[in-house]
Length: 149
Image 1 (cartoon, rainbow, N blue to C red):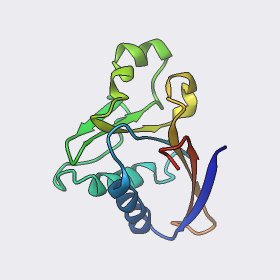
Image 2: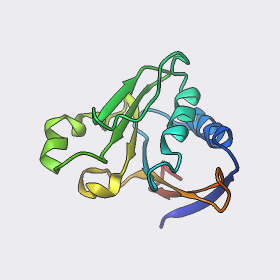
Image 3: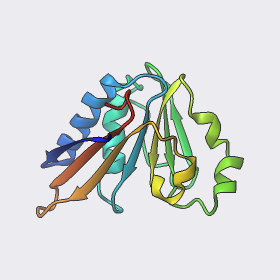
Image 4: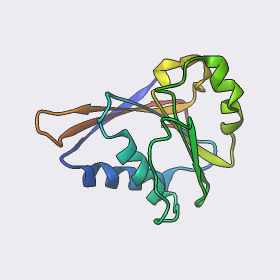
């Protein structure tokens, strides 16, 4: 049974801080599925995850929208995939997506709802929604599987 928890963020700095704390808890083989509208703060959260995973702070952590996947060495590899512009599941598999789900790194997938069949069932789902204020966000975390809990 999925387990859920919500967090409120009042700024990009708070969203990033939540990512950093979460990143410190992650280990190889973990998968995070990020959903939310464009501009919700998914990449900001990933930047915090990178800090928590000890990725070199000089590495520019950005959304890999046009490259599908970006990889960053850290305590374990951070692999950041973005399905937003991927046109087909075949293209995703041709790009080697299935090789990214292993114990040598943490995989973060933006827009997993575009190709749900390729995203492993064991994961932490994070939905980011804009709040009433310009920078307010609600982050809903839902654990799918024992490790995600």
